[in-house]
Amino acid sequence: MLEFVISKYNFWVYVILMMIGLYAMLAKRNLVKKLIGMNIFQTAIILFYVSIGVKKGPVQVPIILTEHGHVVQAIRATDYLNPLPHVLMLTAIVVSIATTGVALAVLILIYRRYQTLNEDEILALRQQRRETGA
Amino acid sequence: MKTIILIFVVLMGLFLLYGTMDMPGWGDPNSPASTWVSPRYIEQALEKTETPNLVTAVLGDYRGYDTMGETTVIFTAAIACALLLRGATGNRRKEDE
Image (tube, rainbow over all chains, first blue to last red; front, side, top):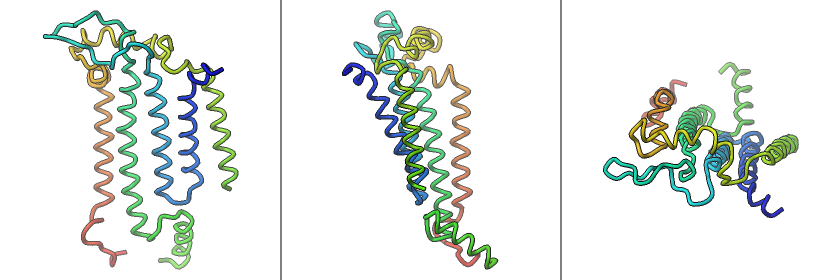
């Protein structure tokens, strides 16, 4: 039982992080808090993928030791961590930075127009302005 | 409304927890992710790409087109930010609105 918990608890932590992010995205009314929730969600996914690449035991980071252009010892796949999740998550981090940046730019414009970031107040203001024709 | 969202989120979490029961254990060297594709990359990357760092080899060589598309993403995001925030700092033209 304890062994089962130890071999799985990392996934459970990521599921909890994902739940926090999803709840913040859906339930919070402040748009910046929604954005932070999205970032927490993305962090959970990134941690999940990186943890897939882990191998227990005497393994090295995925950099092959070379001396004067020659391999020091024969390359065995079991001696190195799995590099593919790391590569995929590099791409995911770049995309998350891009989305966060554009979202923050949009939030700045929203704040300049409505002087608030609360979703309900923004919707009320929109309705009000449409009725008055402003 | 918040209770409905909370129930939905907990339900999603329970589904995912149920899904983790089939996942390989943490750090398992015999997990499918470590035994199917990645050994080929680890063993052949140095020979094929002359790059000791495997992450760089995969990112810049095997997945070079993917990385090129990634730079397009960053460029698009930068252009979008620049267009959105044009004139947002310094002189605020509130009279125009």
